[in-house]
Length: 307
Image (tube, rainbow, N blue to C red):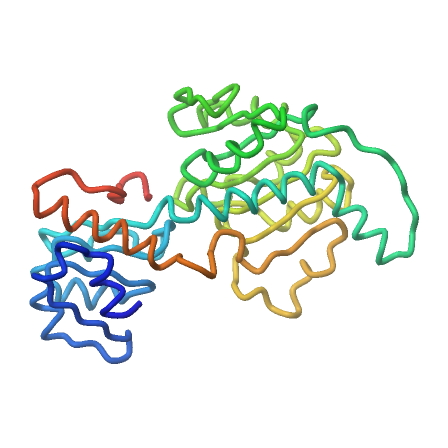
């Protein structure tokens, strides 16, 4: 992120803007004290709370905001916004790829390749599969949108259970057990909050049909990975893919690296090498315009919901 990239995003508003870009290790506290708008990643909440009394919008360049909760550090008149939605384009395509790989048994084929073992069991097509999404925000919807034309049945599990046109069925989180029993592939893509930490554990995995697969594209602690490993070893799951972990980078000595039928991605599913920051700045600039016009902001973080 540069001063010029911020000015470019602001467009017509740039002429009245005074932009400062500083690293976390070299803050300009005087400029921060005068600033109305702030954008950053992994920022020091205590610093903003202490020195950002004039701030109106604090925008983070991520969708997940668990590192910033609770919001008791926010300056009195400030609102925290996030970059939810910027991952949808790449994450949707990556999710489609991964779900297809899981439903086609690719983790088994990778495992057999390492063992020099020929196993030509056939799979059924994606149109016969039921994909259950735990969480159905921008990312889950983007994956479902790409799967739907292929004939897969889409089931969404959300807080409210409110119907959505991208899902064939929708369940409230209180009916999670019922939805899990229907899954051929479980996609975990909900935010990490106090209520979702450890949400998918041993009991929930035991409800899945033998041969179901799992993809975690949310945050590592949403899934109990010890229970996941056991389910893979016992054959309850046909395969799994993880893009997120309790500790990142995943330590070289982690036993997860060698679990059979587990595909590991180094948290790269949703971040685009081209244009990611520009899309974050687009939301930020739009919200500045909305604030100046007295309009509701986009992507406001709900302190109670945790996202």
